[in-house]
Length: 399
Image 1 (tube, rainbow, N blue to C red):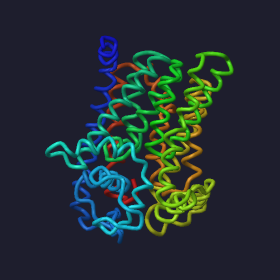
Image 2: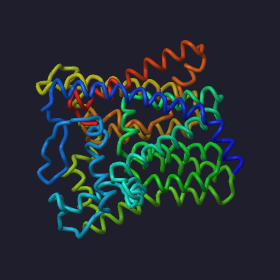
Image 3: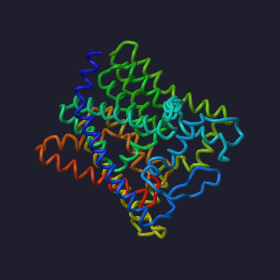
Image 4: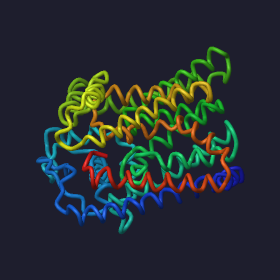
């Protein structure tokens, strides 16, 4: 217990700075949300998740933080994973659609809903908050382990200002998965194989892109086993890592009827399928050729491609400046993101768990003077908050 208290005390500056930056960004997001509601009160920007999937207007910052996937997570947190296959819920939505959302995040939120005055929305936001703090703590731990305490603090700060950081505070699974990934990879770096395997296994219950983490932990454990390090523990890690992902896909497929039907629902109901990067390539090609922007989404398309280009540049720099396990995980996450069909505006959110690339700017900023660093972080926090408000409320694009 004393070691845990000492570790928490050491990480306190990183967690405090993370929370300070996120608070500032959310304040900016709130201002833009209020401004957008006055300028265009009837602008329809998100589907409500009912059987008719009607489009609604944002009226507050909370609408954005509990939109898109978050509406499904809050439904599952409040009502459970589902009822009989073929039946529909009170909103007329087939229960089987709930099985498309990996359950760990709403499972953690559901017990909180039994506490008086805590709604499913509040329960999900609590889980996101705790997960985000855990992720910031883990980022600090990795940064300190690899470089210094200052780099660790700034590593957590960088995660607070990435373009899609607003989802860290919403009812989304990104914060939970990132926390599991951070601590799993920290355990890999420290060669704590049982913890790494267990966390990777849990991550498979949170989202399908956990495959990147599972593969990284499995590969690192295999290398350790071949090198005869860790005894039997690396073998246990290899067995534990894929259990959650394979187990849930197997369970959902059994409930629905078959694996092919499971992936078919993903593709036809949610547009989530592996297309070998065709949708991304089409977007990049349209931008280069100056076509496909009649619906007014040109700014977000350009910004998202720029975000991707920046990510690739940081990943290239990471190759020689970080342990290979971090690079492999970040690269695998990138492959899974660009290879799957999704709206281009979701690029930032989907890349949010690929935190290792943020080590590059963290190390660079660690060399700056305190005054210059404060100015840079403040400016970046304001910019992150602007993007958080502009994306849903002004551009009207998917988070």
